[in-house]
Image 1 (spheres, rainbow, N blue to C red):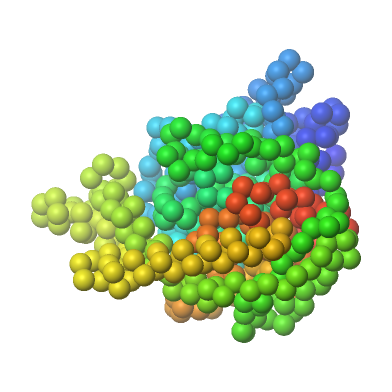
Image 2 (cartoon, rainbow, N blue to C red):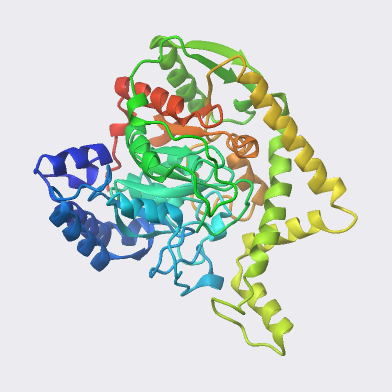
Length: 484
């Protein structure tokens, strides 16, 4: 079979089931492509080639005797903030260099139970803090559509791996847009799940009230297959929801007639690139042509999302990253006594962006400033959540841009934190509200991809996937592949 690397998860599964392709053939083809192209794309931090081939042989041997699940024999890549037993997990940071977790995250356990194969761990901004994957301590991942541009972040390695044909699907994480923004910039599909829909056990925490694990792939149909496997309650995660998990693939009817889609005016922000807005509005018009009703809506507190997020997220990061001190795991910088060693270790091994956010968060939580900053930001968060609750009483879902711009050149914003933070202006409110959001490719601007963002009610990923799949049935943006 030619062009194996272009197969979607669903297509690969059909080929394997039909006996046209073995899991080992698929895995071998991807590993060879990684060896050939990843030195240019730099999506992977660790490639587990021997383990992947062994898992593929086992999957082929078990097929027919035991079919463990919908991902049986399908190779995937894993963002390097998700713990994998026996495989190094660094979170893109020098402070965890060489750390090998003794356990698997719940999502990894569920993927393995379904028969999925791990190709390795994918690059990301350090501790998932960033919008370009330039903050990784190890390498800068490049956008497969133009190697001089960023892939987005923080799940840039996960997005670039799919776009470059180095994995048919990957897992990413989303704290403020870290699945959706790189999915849009790399021309693939990505799903930020409802807070609590997917277990966070085994995820190296950045912002515990914001982080969510989700799938990234070419199509909404592939995302449905993966979400089916990883969703559901986990008693090891106290924030994990007991909400029943529906059959996501069964929801892909291809029909959007009668659905009310809100178009929030605040998401078409000042300074948005004209071609990005045009592609987004054309995609929304396509949904209207398929029978959906478009309704102009307002989310008035959206303008406060960015400043609120950049108080809440750093505050949570400040608390979560206090555990990284070189005493229990990871490398240690020698010093004159324990406290000097901790100070030297954190000062040298945390990157600039991580140190910046820890300082912001520590300041916001400090005595005399807590009420002025953190408490007020949480109050604004409540107002943002209420905006979504009110608008979802009028519409079934929302449609909006994902990023105000296409992928920007590597190095362009690295010295301008505010410009970098503004990359996520259209995605941050969704994390503050805890609702799900899907991105699907919807066009190009200057030969670079643009993504449409669909936002849903809590735990209604099924409707988002249904609409995304219906859009992809009548468009071909998701079939485009970069020429590498």
